[in-house]
Image 1 (cartoon, rainbow, N blue to C red):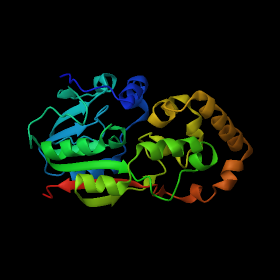
Image 2 (cartoon, helix red, strand yellow):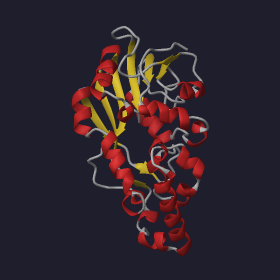
Image 3 (spheres, rainbow, N blue to C red):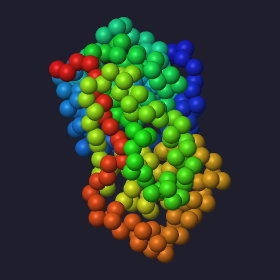
Image 4 (cartoon, one colour):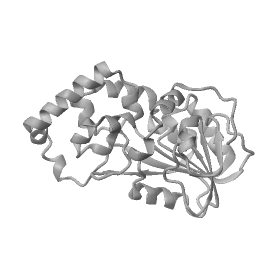
Length: 257
């Protein structure tokens, strides 16, 4: 593992804290994996920036994992691991066929610089992120934790800005299935009881940045609504849906081959 002189961002500190046990909750979803696999098709060398525990990496390519959190990299199963931030990638120009970044660009202290580095070191770039301008909002935010809205809109850049900075030629929507296995915040839109579990909340960087004085009363209200059946009555329509478009998008830039 190679260390970098890059500074520690607030996000790095968060992931150092929540990293233990992360892989138990954040299990790659096969449907999202297939979308990313198709976008990376043909790439023989891939750098995964913000790699974390290595989710969604192609199995038919040589992968180099990059992450600023040592705790996260220690969970990564690969052999090629580099401790570094996205803004200073220690690689030569066009060193990789492709670069990937999954649910990480919102953590980068300098988004444009980081995306510029992706473009510099690779011929193709594949980025999975969330559009804060998307209208459909998770009920958890609207009804229980509006504090999440302020936090998410402060750290996520408008999708149009990311598309422009990356030079993306393709934007693919990804609806979140009701049984999505990758436990980031939106995953449990049809399984509200999961938000009651501390281990699930601990694996979310959003929950990790909210104080217990905010989260615990909200979760208590949700628990009461589930016991009384109030949540089920309000969201009977959701219980009949297989997936919902909550604004998650896969961006592809660079080499189309």
